[in-house]
Amino acid sequence: MNEIIITTKKTKRPIVRGKSKMWGFPDLPENIEHPIGYDGDTVFPLQFICQINCRDIAPYDVDKKLPDTGILYFFADLDYYLGYYDCTPGGFSGLWKKESTKVLYYTGSEDNLVPLMFDKGDVDFYIEERELSFASSNQMRNEEHKLLGKPYFMFSEDFESPVEGWDLLFQLDSDESEDFELNFMDVGLLYFIIDKNDLKSRNFDNTRGYLVSC
Image 1 (cartoon, helix red, strand yellow):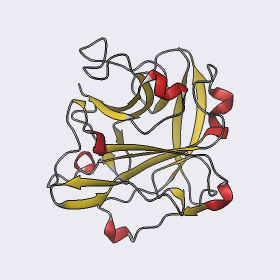
Image 2 (image 1 turned 60 degrees about the vertical axis):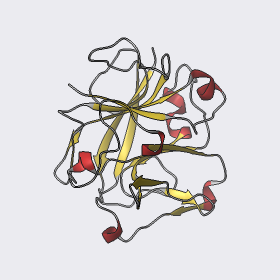
Image 3 (image 1 turned 90 degrees about the vertical axis):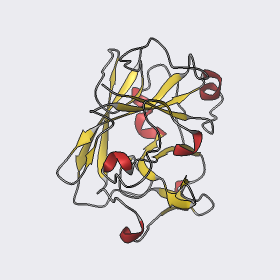
Image 4 (image 1 turned 90 degrees about the horizontal axis):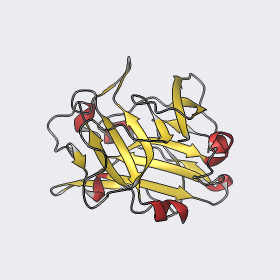
């Protein structure tokens, strides 16, 4: 099963607007707002994880499951797993509530993208942006960031109801760096999963988060 392995690299130069990157702040068109999460009565911006310019990954998407144009953006409620233990986790093991993760798909002109900048004091965690590189693999790679492929399950052969048979869209691994630590319950993984029909129709609105821990 084809999967696209993602590796990250810190950079001292600003990443070109609209290019694939991880962390930092997203480049969004003015008519799309940064997704928000809810913790009781508190509203907060979901953590931006990455933006994937589909032109960057098209050469590696052997099975052509993903669009070959446009930009995919991934967000999630990660504060707890980044060490902010006073907040409520976006989810534990298994399926997360829908509002805890968000995937956006933008198909317009990259000329309309604007780097969305919060004051760094308005977010609990700011992680310096990383350059991304991609590689195609037909072997199941368990513990790393990747697009597509087969998810690695600790205890089950499939996702629990109501998402049985869904596909893996993006896998976010626990990650430790000099400037942050992301730990999903003993170095687990967070999957962004999608219904097969939604993936075929390029509808990413119903993508859900699903956490597997050791």
